[in-house]
Image (cartoon, rainbow, N blue to C red):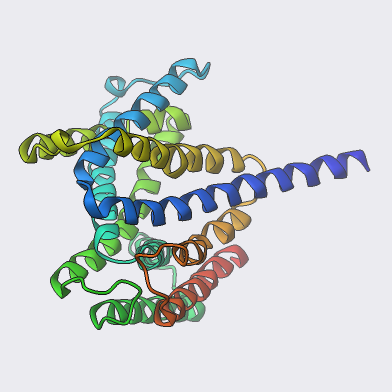
Length: 310
């Protein structure tokens, strides 16, 4: 009986940690979307990911786990290089997308397209494996939901009004790139993990290019001249609640939750994002966005259920 209670407690702890990660991620997306309207996204990236980089380097130093260095193998440094390229693409696209379209749309496209892209990659790698009717249905559903959200944004039916169509299109395109990039990041992170790298070490070496590129843009546009103490407090707050804590909670939850539970709870990010953005006065209530979020979430669940039953 005691053993059963222990297992239940660990599962409950894992679920709570993962749910905390989802809530922090969703709330920070809404807060950032509002914060970035009058602030350079590149200056934000420079400060935020410099802090994140230092934090995970410190965690890696304090860790007792030994792993191979970057220079010890050509495969390792190439994986780190590609991981940095993809990470820079993801975060630059993600934060620019949040500047132009509402957070729930960004979140839905990011999380909904990811599983579908993963299915396509598996299909390309193993042509003998058929996608199956349910996977095809789910992929079509996510595509329909994505097109619906794009239409809602471009036609002025979303929660944010007054943005030009060209900027809306850029935001939608960058949100899609973010979803595709997340799949590639998982691939390179897994490769490094299989070579003995721990989570802290992977994250400590993931953001070099993000910091470098954003730093070059900041020097060019001289946006660092406009930063205030209030801005710094906001950036530190978003960095802690939107990057460091979600990553820490998510990684810790993996010890206690099944892959199925992990995927299901993680897929709730768009729903929580929509709920949190209701409290943002900048964003109007949009039932069209809600419908799009529900479509993508439901069909995203179909992909997960299919994967679990295989």
